[in-house]
Amino acid sequence: MRSLFVFLVLAIVVATAGVASAEVYKLPNFDKLTEYVFVYNMTYSKKFPERTESDAILFWNKTGHAYEFNLTKLGGYEKHTIKVKRGDTYILEIHEVGFSKTLMNFTFQPHLLYIDYPLWVGKTWARFATFEGSAWTPMGEIAVKGVTFGYAKVVDEETISVEAGSFKAMKIKTVMESIFTSPFPMKIKTTQILWLTKDGVIVKRVIYKDNELSEVIELKKIESR
Image (cartoon, rainbow, N blue to C red; front, side, top):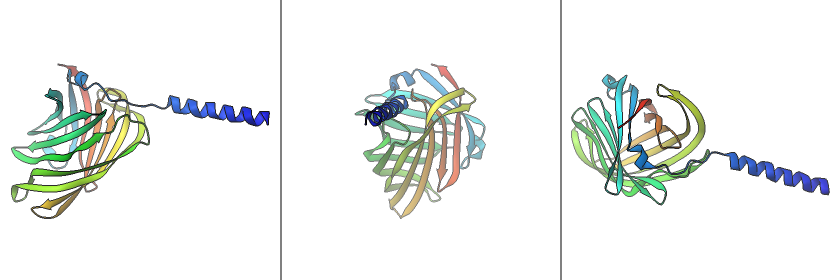
């Protein structure tokens, strides 16, 4: 009986030590991110092949009670307005422009949960919101409405090497189904794989549209503003 008790105590200690040593990423300091310029190499772009091997420059800005993720690309930009609420980050709107065309200009209700902090390997969260705004189609820019839903999961923590160096990061996979309800029915599946450091730095991002590779960016260098 004594040996069994000792065994159970040791098992609990070992299990607890394993949990304690597991990495957990808490909400980063977004004000700190605004002090730097993040330069990425766009290693692949299906929609705009001329962007391949060009630089994409990311600025984090603070606007009122929100933060602005502004990724400037060759011939356009991608801007997300992000709110921090109760320790999580939410996307209020996305505005993407490519070569004078408004590809996407959406606002979300409720605000779309982006990163559900804290993060650890295996964590999963659901994502849902309605959207409205405008999008580019073969008919030109049109007003649209719809709903987007899916999930995100921290699939791994790994050291990833890019031109800017080697970084320890959480690998987050997001799968979203977007259904357009107006002006005509249409469905798009978007899968994103993101490598995110403890400080909130995006090291690499890979995007698939309807299971086809769409875009890849990798961190090239970090500069002080």
